[in-house]
Structures are given as C-alpha cells and as structure tokens.
Image 1 (spheres, rainbow, N blue to C red):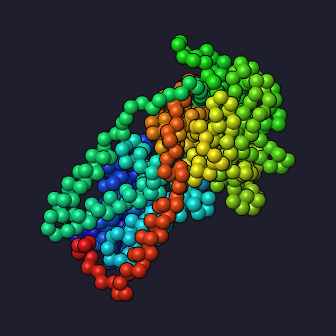
Image 2: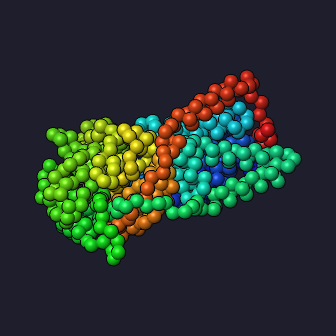
Image 3: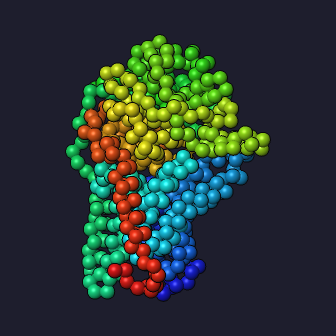
Length: 505
C-alpha cells in the first residue's frame, strides 16, 4: 500500500472511506460497509507518523462520513428556497466540516499518546461523547445507529449508544491489529472479520413482543412542509386529520384507546385554537387525543404537546425542552434578525423558548407516557431524564423538514434506538411518515410509510424489565473512557519512535 505514502492521496482515500462507511446508515442499512470503511481509516491512522497526518485522516474520514450521511440537511433550506437556498451548501459543508473536527482531534490525540492504534478506541468514543453534548449536542449518525437491525444493536440495552460505539471501534481496531501481524495475522484476521460480518449481516430476530390491550391510532396527514402553512391547504389538512380521527377501525380491530396527531398538527396557536380543539375532540368521540401545537405565553412561544379531554379542554401540556439550533431558535437571534435571518421552524416570532425539561403525561388506563417532540428522540439522555419510568414512549414529529428518504429513515432508526435502550415500546406519529409502533426490542411492528396519508391502529406492546442502560445511563462508559485514557497517557513513551507501515503489536 505504498500509494498511501502520498499525503494528498491518503487524505482523499480517508474522505472516500468515510463516505463509504456512511452506507451503514439508513436508507442503505449496510453496517458491514460501515465497518470496512472504519477499518480502512484505522489502517491509515496506523501508518501515519505525525500527529498532523493522523488529524488529517481523522478529519477527512469524518467529513466524508457526515457529508454522505447528512445530505438531508439541505432539505430544510429548500422549503423556502428564495430566502434560504443560498445557505444550503454552506450549512452542509460547515456542519460536516465542523463536526469532523471532533474526529480529527481524536485521531491526533491518539497518535500523541502512542504509536499503536489502541488509544483510538477511547479517543474516538470520547469525541463522539463530546459531539453529543457540546453546544446542545448533535449525536446523529453514530456508528451504533447503524446497528439497530442487527444482533449487536441489542447491546444498546446494556451499554447505550456510546458504549456500543466504543465496542464497534474496538472491533475494527482488532481487525487492523490482526492483519498487521507478520505470522498468522491474515488467517486469524480473516476469520475474525468473517465473524464480525456475520454478526452484522444476520438480522435480529426473536419471538414477537407480547401485546397489551391498548390500541393507539396514529394520524398521518402527509402535509408537505411547503404546503403546511399555506392558507389554501390548511383547511384541507385539518379536515383530513379529522376524517382519520373519526374513521371506524378496520374490521375486527379494537377501537383506539388513544389518538395521536403529529408535531404542530394545527396551524393555530393554542390560545386561539378552542374551536379547532373542540372539533378534534368531537371527532374522537371521547377518546383522548394528544397533538402537537404551538403555544404562546406572553412574548414567548413553545413547541408543545397537549392532551385533550372529551370536550376539547386541555388536560395536560408538555413544552419541548431540547430545541434545534437554527431550526427552532437562532443563536444570536436578535442580531441575525436584522438581516432577515430567522429560525426555520417557528411560525411566530424569532424562535421558540425551551420547556422546563422531561415530563410524563398521565394517560389514565394506558399509564404514563414520556412525550418526545421530534429532535428530542435523538438524545438518549433526554429519555433517561424522565422523572420516573414510563409505560411507553410517545414521539410526535414533523419529518417533512428532513426530505423524502434519508433524513426521516435515519430519524426512525434513532427512535428505535431509544426503545432498545429503555426496553420500552414507542408510539411514533409523523406528519409525512414514518408513523410506527415500535416494540421494546426496537422492531417496527406496524407502520405507515413515507409520504402516505392515512392512519394506523396498532396494539401497544408490553414493556420489558428496566435495562442496564436505563438504570446507569452513561456512567459505565464514562468510567471506561476515563480509565482507558488515563492508562494511555500514563503509558505514553517519552520519545515516540514510529515506523510507518510497521506492525502494530
């Protein structure tokens, strides 16, 4: 592999390896290719003699991975192209390049610690942890996200997303280490790689989850984002949702015990929506309804979910607390508003205010549910922050912002991760799809596809026993990272002697 001695070519290969690794994420769902891309990046890291070379490989790998995996980031800017389209390429490149800095720093730090590859296991996982927490965090597209269809993906219940990411990186390092050995490395390495590939190819399967008695109806109006707030289309979408709400269940199916409408399902703020709420409750014929709505309190606006009573009264309210930067609020919003730049998703004012935090919604016979509005399902810590263990998770989302394939399917994968981590079922209702019932092993039991209008009546699966991750959260992986990084620093040789292309023993 002498061609990798050329710095520019090596960097290009790192970018290509990252783009190749992104095939592990939806809609491709080929985690074996994600593993192979990571192995290629680690092998190039092994051959890098200097920290800046390692940093370039790490940054290039991250940039290619994010750029391919996050092309959906362009979609929100195309909803109002006359105002925002010019921002799309800058936003995509700057977002991917900025977050790739975490990976570049991880590769550089690992090379500073040792000429070997093993510190990368701890450094890259720590970088992912920082990416998920700093500046409100953006843990979208972690390696663990690509594993939800596989047997290893069930490890989320024990380790959580960061612990499983650490295991995945360690497995890739083992492959590189075995192939780098002089004697039997190729034979052992090939065998170990085949075992990993089998684990990543064979889909997870087990008997169907036991179902409870409750049936939940999810209403999916399929309101394209460009039409959602159009004055001509608003009544059509509202009537469509009312029709789905009052529709009789399928032959032989039970009547719904709860009806879910998606995020910002109606265009009117809550304080002037009494008439609409009464119509919704009348269509539901006494069945409780949870719907997304914009709520205002003085000069503050909230992205909220409300529980309606039998005559349209609001019984409970939940305000979204983990907001999307630039989408739901603008950093330096007062300054940027002078240039006509406002948050993309808020219809009123310059953005939303944040709610007080995770809260449970009491749904009577169905028990308590943890509402998650759109982006909040991306964060395992938001689910773990619930004040008590809920009976099920309930996500209301509007994935019309994310395009027509890649973004919504990746968001669904993250919802499935949260179900596995908690051992809880999730009822997920999405404006344009995918609306789904997810069992506590993260499997979709019933769904309504992308860009379809309709409703889904699905039985709610029973929860599993509390998982290790739901009890301990990130504490175990934090302990492993701190111990691992401390040992790497303590064992760091005073003078690093490095032979590019040598073995990693």
